[in-house]
Image 1 (cartoon, rainbow, N blue to C red):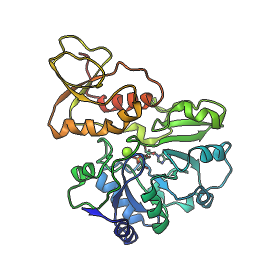
Image 2 (image 1 turned 90 degrees about the horizontal axis):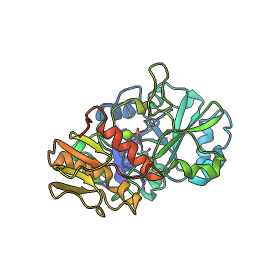
Image 3 (image 1 turned 30 degrees about the vertical axis):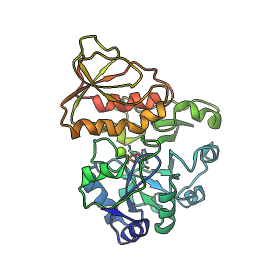
Image 4 (image 1 turned 180 degrees about the vertical axis):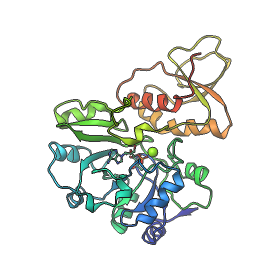
Length: 318
Ligand code: TXA
Ligand code: MG
């Protein structure tokens, strides 16, 4: 059910959960001040209780109400990338944030989104917690139709059109004296070097049994369609079946191409990636190949990570 910004604001203040657009992906929003509404988010998504939520604020100044200490390079990062698709995990005054939102951790994740609709909404409602608006483990939603497909036609969605980036925010966490990338996202690793003076290492890809990842969400299955995805670094000439590939490449005539766009425009690939993964499910496709013969740099590094996670547990070699 499509709702206006005003209705979204009223529903949120009444303690309801509504879906709202951001520049990255759609979020399932609840007021930070309403623990029952936050609990309802976990139930709706089928989300494990040990996977904390991001707190969305309208302005960086508001973060000081939750923090206890100054963190090196916090301001250069905030100035360079907020409002926008960056999330920062920092130590907090734990009494200032309900335990359920931060999954009992002594840190919390903050983001100042850029989408004008959600910014106005947060100014009306106060801080919102927002995980991506998808059933846990499934591809995120990048338009209102995706939310209706996961949560039903009657679920309230404030429709802000298609998301600009189509990939979640990049999460940086401050640990052992440096910022590290806890989740790759819409901003690539190299973009942070000017603000930090170093390339933040990418963490949490393959946490070992005795270390916990910087970002709890990295432990869980993610971004997966029902279809088994097979990632191919080269396309055999006799390949048959559905292939996620690129418009500017030639593939065997025995393949049916679902185009991710043109590799010359990697941000456009990001924009359509989740819609393409969802299309596999809509068409009840059980198996698809993915052309992975592209460089793992810039935003393509995030796309590689998402496809690898989407394929994990089901992949096999051709
Ligand atoms: O672009 C985005 O970030 C979107 C939009 C809606 O803002 N939100 C989003 O939320 O992707 P979600 O819940 O799907 O992913 C948030 C990630 C989870 O993997 C969670 O583990 C991590 O943020 N996270 C939240 N709080 C954390 C904390 N205190 N420490 C480490 N990771 C945290
Ligand atoms: Mg998510």
